[in-house]
Amino acid sequence: MNKVLEGKVITELSRSPKVGLDLFLFSQCEPVLAMQGWDRIATARSDQNGHFLFNISEAGPYELRWKHDADVIEHEIHIGDFDNRKYIEVIYLNKERKTFPWLVEI
Image 1 (tube, one colour):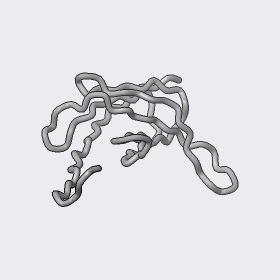
Image 2 (tube, one colour):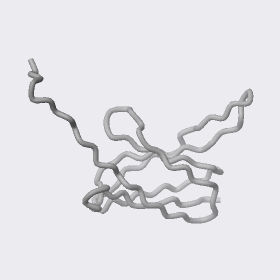
Image 3 (cartoon, one colour):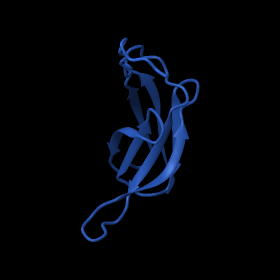
Image 4 (tube, one colour):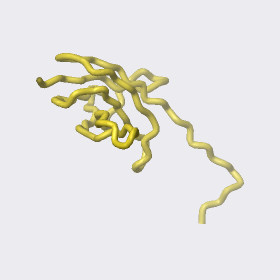
């Protein structure tokens, strides 16, 4: 049975849509040697309205992850299994870059 997980990404402070954020959906795989792992089953990118959508057939539970830079995954949302359709809202945290005036780039 196909399911749809959709949502919207908004920035924390301005509450405006976050465009172009890569989101990764993982499904929990069977325990192996008493350890549980996660398999990536889908990838989506938020559009100009912050909207994203996954069409999935794998059973849950699920974990939705997203990243700020490079390959560092900084946030995740755990989602239980569901039927048919589910909508979630992702808050993209605005991070300040700290600059130190005494540092000089060479």
